[in-house]
Structures are given as structure tokens and as C-alpha cells.
Image 1 (tube, one colour):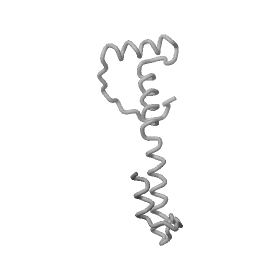
Image 2 (cartoon, rainbow, N blue to C red):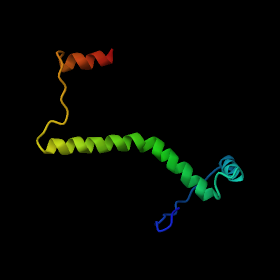
Image 3 (spheres, helix red, strand yellow):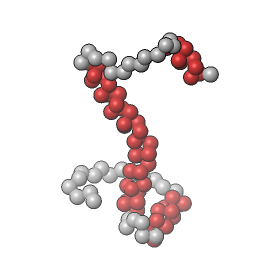
Image 4 (cartoon, rainbow, N blue to C red):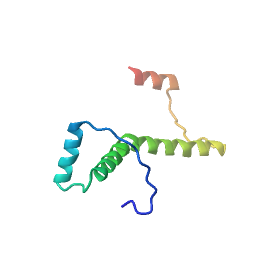
Amino acid sequence: MYTGLILTVVPLRLNDDEVRRLNLLMKQGRYRTRNEAIRAILAEGIEEKLGEDEDIADLVNKLLAIRKQGKNPISYASKRSVVEIISEGRE
């Protein structure tokens, strides 16, 4: 799974209950080792926390690149003013 990758060792302190639960996951056959379990759970958590943010950051970077080309990346046509639209969302 991690063949050829350079892995960094990160010391981690877990309480007894967390270790017990990791061991339970291993007994259930979900993971072979605690390291494997921790890496998988951490990867899922990071994806959950950053997945949307990374997508948004990528979108913002693309919009900024369009802006640097002198183009307007977003336009919105409305009969209402920007103030009316924003104040509507605050109600």
C-alpha cells in the first residue's frame, strides 16, 4: 500500500479506550495493525474535514487565474441591487 513512499514517523499518544477500540477493529479483521487502522481513520477524517475546502481552494485559484487574464470570472445579472440581494440573505 505504501511501497515506495517516504513515511514520516509521528509520535501519538492514545488513551486506554482508544487503544481498546483500535484493537477491536483489528480483531474484527478490518485492519491488520494499529498503524494501518490509524492511517486509514486519519485519512478518512482528513478527507471529511478538508475535502470540500480543497475543492473550494482549487475553484478559487481557477477563478483568480481567469481574473489575472483580465476576464471577469463571475457575472450575475439581476434587476435588484447587490445590497438588496445581500440584505435578503440576512433576514
